Length: 213
Image (tube, rainbow, N blue to C red; front, top):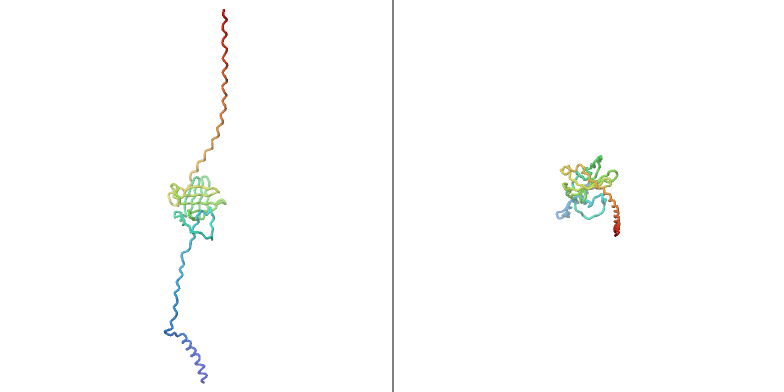
């Protein structure tokens, strides 16, 4: 009988021991836990723009470099513009550029906008060669920007302006062709040598004196 009572009381005793193990005396203070500072993600790191036109020097990715100046304020947000020069005009709107020349059909070129330290460039491909419109913030007469066009393996100079400005409206058409250089004059024929005048005839002999009588 006592043995059965002991077996019944055993789980109760073990439960009491477990409860006492979780008891904590007043002088048993938990060790302080240092607070963990929250991790705050910083702003994304934006690499500096290239210093030269990507058409002149290919972009290099993955190499360490020194910090450079930011892009030009006048062109960093330029996404639409008009540019023109003697015999050509380009109108850029978003990812498309329209290239016009007098007497030729206009060509639409898909372009990619690339910002670099000195300006902005719209680069595409026309007739299987590089097509690029480079715009820099340099005064160009009545226009606030200067443009350099590369098309058909040739380079053209001109002016540019942001779309929607009076200067851009004036640049939407190709400028007058530069006058052709005059043909060089034919060299003058050498002058024919002049014949010298013949020597004067010798003076006639004096008349014979009349015979004296």
